[in-house]
Figure 1 (cartoon, one colour):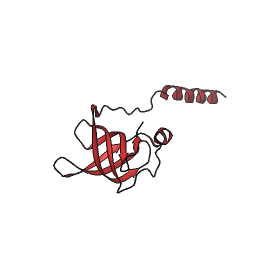
Figure 2: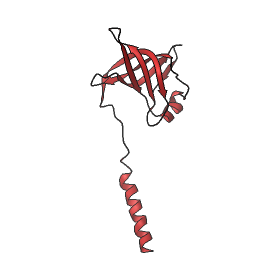
Figure 3: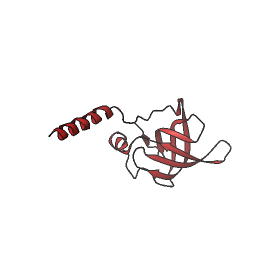
Figure 4: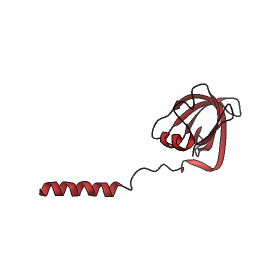
Length: 125
């Protein structure tokens, strides 16, 4: 009985201590002072946890092809408040992605919204 009480106390203590520890993904890696828009063609759409990923090819100011990666919120959040689903995008779709670019200049966006070819806006709330 002593071992059971000790085990339960230990398990409870671990849960209490670890409760505030889940990772929080901030925007420190992104330049949140300026929203960047990139028009391109979707090459891959991964509707997976922890963040939905959109990969696209877009031409830069010099006409050179760049491979962009856009990180959105979690799938469940996009389903609940954004109207997204696993079929929202498919390879070959032309979209305009807007968001915060990586501070180091990499072609990576913390997605704010996308505009589909038909003009429909899909927000990343």
